[in-house]
Length: 195
Image (cartoon, rainbow, N blue to C red):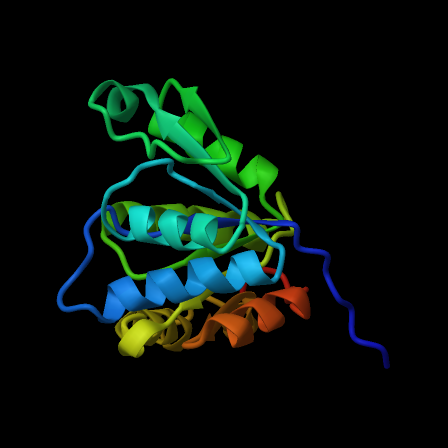
């Protein structure tokens, strides 16, 4: 049986507007940006120069990559737009920003981050589960950051709130090339969400 390979031209990347503790997360964001640039995959992200978001963009741009920022008006007005992006859009709200990013992207990756990062990732995963989109989602599991989250998903499965097959609806990898390769070869679970 031949495995399907997806064409991934652009990835929506969700990540912290803070840099996190120590330099492990900064290095990971830079590695992901450089890897996506090397592989010719464009980045769509929240458009700011802050935290991991800025590090990701800087690294991709330094590697000759394309970085498309989608920033909401409030953050743009505060001067948070990254000044060197390949292109950017200013939209009215965070809700519109998420919708626009998903419309451009062929897949999604979440780095470590806060509640906004988690919310963006969960929305993309949910839309996949419901069949509204078919865009694989992945967690860049830097230093085991996402393991407690996946343990919570396992708790949902154990308590019969989520079919076990849906755990396979998210790719979890700790290295950029492995994560991208898994997104390219991703096959969506096709079981109903209802138990």
